[in-house]
Amino acid sequence: MCAAPGITIFVRHSSDCRYNGDEFARRCQCRKHLRWTHNGTQYRRTAGTRSWAEAETVKREIEDQLSGRLTETKPEDSVRGL
Image 1 (cartoon, rainbow, N blue to C red):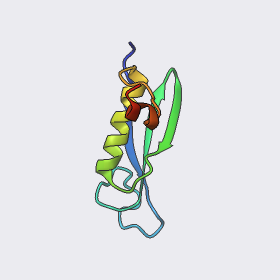
Image 2 (image 1 turned 90 degrees about the horizontal axis):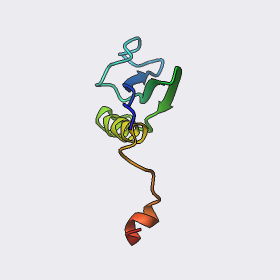
Image 3 (image 1 turned 60 degrees about the vertical axis):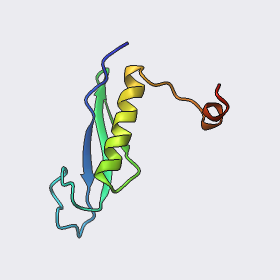
Image 4 (image 1 turned 180 degrees about the vertical axis):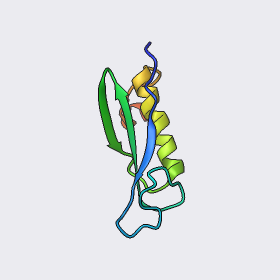
């Protein structure tokens, strides 16, 4: 099992956001994204949310996948108990 890379949440603000220029502003409702480096390659991915708390949840899920603690399963399989 390898260690998961550190994942950073950042914000891509709209042009009229009052927090424009602060990529770590938690209060605005702009889109949240994730950034990390793994094996020398930088990755960026949308968190698919405008909520910092939901972005934290997505961040933990990706960390679990990258560290091998979580395997991707189809929702149908987990319902059936497979």
